[in-house]
Amino acid sequence: MLSVQDSLEELKLLADTAGMVVVGQTSQRLNRIVPGTFIGPGKVEEIKETITELPADVVIFDDELSPRHQRELEEAFGENIKVLDRSALILDIFAQHATTHEGRLQVELAQYEYRLPRLTRQWTHLARQAGGGGGRSGNGGVGLRGPGETQLEVDRREVGRRISKLKDDLENVRGHRQRQRQQREKAGLPVIALVGYTNAGKSTLLNTLTGSDIYVANQLFATLDPTTRKTVLPGGKAVLFSDTVGFIQKLPTTLIAAFQATLEGITEADLLLHVVDATHPNLMQQIEAVEDTLAEIDVPRIPKILVLNKIDMVEGGKPDSEKFAGLGYNAIVGVSALEKLGIQDLLQAVEDVMKTTLVPIRVLLPYSQGELLSWIHTRGVVDREEHTQEGVLIEAHLPARAVQRVEQFFESTSPDIEEI
Figure: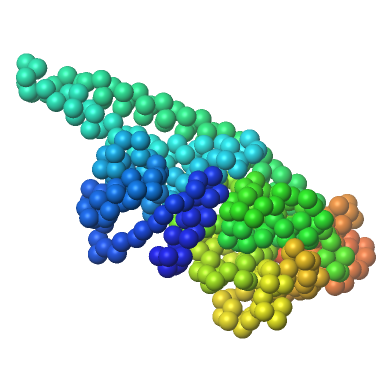
């Protein structure tokens, strides 16, 4: 977890990315959150005075506010002062940067799910005001439904319908992505997914690894939409590298849920490259935030390589890999994606790690299964191939995820195979 000051500095970067100009910051230590206003009454007055002095028209909190907190704070700070929390700010940045149809759908869904409880509770107090004369209405004290409550119901139904429609649209996107993954699986190309904290250099690394020209900018969440490109490892085997949205601490849960179709690409990869900024003062905290997010989306036990990026800016040109040794990575490699340093070392590490995670198989393929024979050569490492009267006897190593496709042709099993 980042310190309070470091977290506020990150919040400032988020505000900069959203196009805001930060003119001041403050913090308060509390034993417990104040029910009405989140912060204490003295701090509320202090911020109110600061708003007038600077001046400012937006106050951003580095945590998620409840609808009540947001409403009470806006009333306390005065009209024309907008109160945002960290989640709303991140959602706004995602909305600005989503360029594809899928990305816009995902962001819109996250925004609606974030706003729904706030919309509901904001209308509740209006409903009480509008229908508050129930005891004098002559109907036993029940009271007539007022316009506030009617508007609440209308808005809830409309937002609910929109959320359902967005989920249906995203389910279609999810199905399309699944078909794409099945086609890649049929083609026999392993998939290596790049993950990491936002602005760690994933897109730059993908460009360098594959000779692509994906958009890169020195800002948080510069790219949201997943990109997949093919390249060849030192041993001659073709693989697919796939980039996706960067992570950040306190990433809104609505956003993680909305981006499920995109993040599934991580859960179904053969190998993960966890790209980190080796120069960042909060490097270890960023690694922890990414690992926490991977756990939240239920990523299985996939082999992982820690990629220490920007080593050209590290004193001596070589980061201290020993301090990461106990984190459970299959390999640790230092690179400079921008200066193209250490790229061959990384590709070799990818090849080596993938070899160590392969599962031994022994299959007898009928001669009619020529396409599957070619697939095994592409997907794994063939150790022995023998042509017999019954078919082609192959001893090879395949990724664990790929074994299922050939298990009906097992000639004999081994303890490794039986565990799958």
